[in-house]
Structures are given as C-alpha cells and as structure tokens.
Length: 547
View (cartoon, rainbow, N blue to C red):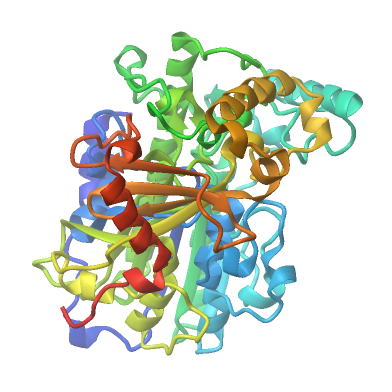
C-alpha cells in the first residue's frame, strides 16, 4: 500500500457528484459518520504525518470546521448530548455510567424525531455510548449482516498472544479488585496490536460492510423513503488496533512526539489526570513517564487506526456513490472529543483543554455552493448544533427542547460572524475515574492509589484553605468557554450554580495556542469581562442571525 495510491483513489470519491439545488429532494438521506477519540490529526487539518486521503477528499468537496467543540470530552456525555440536542447537565449525563433515557424518558433524539417525520433510521457501530443504544426509541431497524464472516477476536484482538494477555490481566484484576474491575476500566489487554489480517477482522472494518449491506437493503425495500444511517467507528479509541497494512503506511522514526510534555504553568492542578485510561492497559507503566520508545509506538498505533478508519470511510462513500444516492445525501463527519497523545504530559481525553474539546467536523451537501466547497470556516460551533442543523437542512421542524443553534447560515457563508463563545465541561479530571465517575474506594486500593495521592498533594498545595475533599471529588466542575481569542476555564460547585469560582484559568490563543501558561492572574480586568460573558451562558453567546 502506498500513500500516493491512496490519495489518487480518494480524489475521485466526490468528483462530479454535486447536483443543482433544485434537483435535491425535499428530504435527503443523512450519512452520519462518527469517529471515536479522533482529534484533528488529519491531513485536511494540517497534520504533517497523518495519512487520511478519504477524509481529506470529503473536506476538499465540503466545508471543514476549524473551531468545532464537544460539550464534554468523554464518550457518553458527548454522544448523549449530540443525539438529544441538549447539554450534559440538562440531561444529567456527566459520566459514562448514566443512561440518558432513564434520566430523560420522554426526550426525543435526533433519529427518533426523523423517524416521526418519514425517515427510516439505523445505527451501525458506535453512535450512542456502550449499552445505551436506545434501540426501542431511536432506530427503526437492525443492521443487516454482510456475507463476510468475522472471526472471533477476544478482547478485540486478532493475535492469540494478545487475547491471552487480555484474559489473564482481566482475571487477575477480578480476583484482586472484585467483579466490577473490568467495568471500572481495570484489567485491560495490550494497548496496541499490529496484525496482518483483513480489515473486516476488526470491528470497524466489519461495521463498514454492515453499513453498506444495510443501505442496499433499505434502498431495495423502500427506495422512496429517506434514511438516516449512523455509522460509528470505534477507532482510534484505545486499544490502538489496526491491520498491519495501515501501520506500514508510516515510518516509525518520522513520527513526532508531543513537544509540550508538562501541564500549563499556573494551571489548575485538578485539571489533568494521571493517564488512568492508558495505564490500565497491559504492559503500560503504572507510574512515571511513558518512555519515548513506547510513546512513539502508541502514536504509531493511533495513526494506523486513523488511516484504517479513513479507508473504511472511503469504502462507504464509494458505496453511496455506486448506489446513486450521493446526490441526495448529506454527509456529516464528526468525532466525540479530542485526545492527548502525551500533550501536557498525559494520555487520554477527559480534560477541559483545547486538545480534548476541539474536534474534526466536516459537512458535505449535494447542493453546496461551489464557492464554499473545499473551504474551511473559523466559526465557533458545538456538536450540540448538529441536531438542529440537520433538521433545518431536511426541512423538518425542530422540537422545543434543543439547546444548540443550527449552523446552516455558516454552510452558506463560511466567513460570516457566528457565535461569540462555545462551552464544554468536565468534572475534576484528576480526582475522577477515567469514565468521569467519582473515585471509588476500590480505585484507591489499586495501583492508581499512589497516583491519586500524588496529584492530591498538588491540589491541596494549590488550593490551600479552599480544599474540601467532598467538593473536589464529587461536586467540582470545570466549565470551559472558548471565544475567538481565549480559553476560559471556571472551576466551581456545579450543584450551586450561583457559587463563586474556586479557581480560574485563562489562555490567550493569539499568543499561546498550545495553552502553556495560565495568565488569569496577570489580567484581572479581562477575567472580570470574560466571567461576565461566561455567566450569560450558551444562550447569551448565540450567533446574531441579523448579521
């Protein structure tokens, strides 16, 4: 496999596919592509190393959003927010173990609302998080089964050695920490795998074949009914598992490592975790730095997964075109949050910093103005905005509960003024388990105990008399506000919205785009101004449609 061949193949995916606006049906199909844990590490976003020709081709014919942000940098809250069109605290989902439907029995999800307006809806792969697939409300059918048989991959691994290590580590954790150890993220297998196997051996390759087969069946059975097809890829989420041919795309010694390996100077000590998610993996050091050699292997694995998923997206786009549906389909590619690859000295998502909240977002529509195709926009948008945008494009009235703003005007004019700020949140990253749930006593008794104690010392030293264990472990929320020029993080008790902040962070993106220095103490007047803007909430920072 060769980068040049990949690029040439991808370049033809969308050529000649646009249609004049009047030929687009009133209700177009929707291909809703989700990628797990993908930061903007893509060629179209300026990555010097990532090989992503199919996503790049989509961007070259669509609109790329440079400033899209998630509402919370962890899987379930982010995805529940996207699919319900409401923010994490509104739906009471701020960690991975809350079922949004139990908390909000009557809320109407995006596919559910589309189904009520004439659509068929199907999910293949990961759209909602984990067990919260909402099959009884959000989907009208099950995905089809392709002809290809997928081999058994225990723990997700193809290699017998890795399957055995996964099983061994899992069993040892259960014996030591109890039956809930795997649920709490302990007892994981190796952090990466490079096996010479077909794409469909692993879950994402198989899911692509499922999605293609499902689309064909839907079109055969109901050719006149529009569809919402959610195709969710689980990579590049840990573990970094991809067929060998995607690892082979990269020269290991050319893969750059993170250059900012320390947390922000003067930043909140509670704002960075000790890489819990990675350290739970077999063979990863349980304390101390990740050695450069291992760090390079991990990043190599992440990039291989990016290219693996990119190839699957290319297959799906080819199938859409071959089915004659591209000229009546809106394609939206998004990811649930970013990821630290050693940046700020940590590995994982689950922070309130730019590297965690900023995500790729690319939109392609068949009737997009030719002056817009291939452009990027710096407009500040949020993933919660996708729900109302899709409805507006499809001519479907929006339900009253939505908390996002349709960015249809940006699709028409990428340079227009837009939102004044966007918002995200994350509770006490340093003192929560990596699924954002409060620390259990069992977690303290594991190998994470010393890591927790070490970070606690830093927090207590920084906070002084403001330290309160119950507050910091259970009720402290970091609220991030991103404006055109600044990232502003307010740490406060989320159960008492009117309470005063216990800590504030301010990063000047004009001079410090990597957020290396908290300058809040140097600019008290600016902090006061931004705090006033923050207190207006998302409602007070929406775009003025009169502009």
